[in-house]
Amino acid sequence: MTGNDIRRAYDKLRPDKDAQERMLRAIREEAAHGAETPRRKRRTFRGTLILAAALVLAFGTAAYATGLFGLRSAVLYHKLYGDTDVLSLQGLADSPEGMANARWQSFCSSYDPEGAILATIDNGSTGLEPRYDAYPCYTREMADALDAIAEEYGLQLLTPPTLCGSSDPLPPRIADVLPASCDAYGHVFDGGYAYDCGSFMAEGTFTFRDGRWPYPTSYQLICNERGYLSVSYLSIGNADEYTQWEYETACGMPVMLAMGPDKALIIADLPEAFLVVNVLDVRVGDVEAGEAAMPNEVLEAMADAFRFDTV
Amino acid sequence: MLRAGKETIEDVYQRHVVMLYRVAYSFMKNGPDAKDMVQEAFVRLLHSGMTFQSSEHEKAWLIVTVSNLCKSALRSPWQRRTGFDSLSQPPAVEDTPPDETLEAVLALPEDYKLPVYLFYYEGYQTAEIARMLGVAPATVRSRLNRARKKLKLTLGGDTYDG
Image 1 (tube, rainbow over the protein chains, first blue to last red):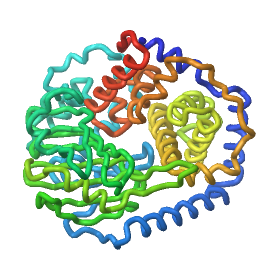
Image 2: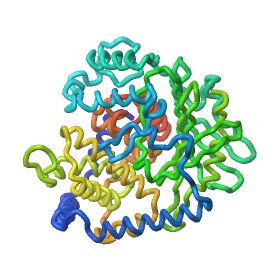
Image 3: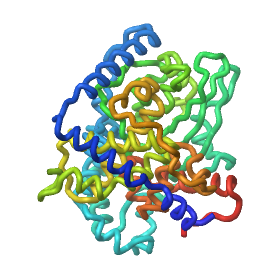
Image 4: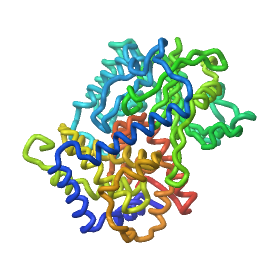
């Protein structure tokens, strides 16, 4: 199969003219009715009630705002795309690594907004040195901005990452941190990548064997070493919708746990590195079986599984 | 008006409806649900009062929004049961011809579908996709790599970036 096959397949996918007209008619009606229709109010209200009930039933205990640090303190900024808070993956927002990333994102938001320069480069070479390969740079101007930000915050650039497939031997640093399957749960490493400095990203799947959470749960672990410029970030929706609490893992490391409407987070702010585990599949179900929400205890068990003390 | 000038929601709709339908169909795997998601994305745009720096920003916002709506709908059964009652249409005849490639792409894990669509169909660069999805460029590349492997496993033959 080629890229052309994929393009041809998607070409066939289009709503018929009648459907397009129906959708447009409904949108026009919305426009005519104003910003808040009864339908939207009803759904929001019902959704809030169900979510609140699910949280109370599933979690049992009242969560509290953490004294360690709050999720808000790791939010870099609010992004218009998708209307979401953007979480720092390098350190708290006021750390040198967090501030540098915010500066880079600010630069990118105003640079080449129409993508005109990028369009001229297309898939060709950028002509930039390999030292910028870890970054979404495609012009000398961008590379210079990256260097200036790194210098201002006293950070080094990352080397290009090495991809690790699910069947590849894992670098020891990743292998040490990742969970090992045991009686309580199975764990599968799905892939990731690693930088020479020790920063890495790993994706995996938990399957609890003791029935406490019967759904496979995917996660991404992002570990960023201090002192390096990383420009990745994580969109998390509204940070205020997360329930947060402090937790000490089985290996004795203090972490912050946050349970949100669609995902959960495990955050470890360590002296040498900043780690974020992005837990997906925290709310699953179908129309017939109803919805299930991951209990807090399951998130704590996942946090226990990671050996943050090896970082 | 959504942008500087005299554009209306209908202009934006005509410009993006087919593209958004493809994104939504990738997630929902059926026409009626995909149409609901597309419609909801435009309604959100309408109510948000959002202005965009460029048509690329507008397109990116819509792609991310419809993707998020689809993911929420798939994970929240109450939303599917009750959310679109007043917008429901008569049962639609499935309007997509069977296609082996499309079926294989639709069977990809959720996280792989959007990068595949944006890269192969919309022609975005991995760096742009990374910016849009809020992940590292290497994450996009590794997802594309894994998607290619899975497509090769599903369909046989070779896959490449062409």
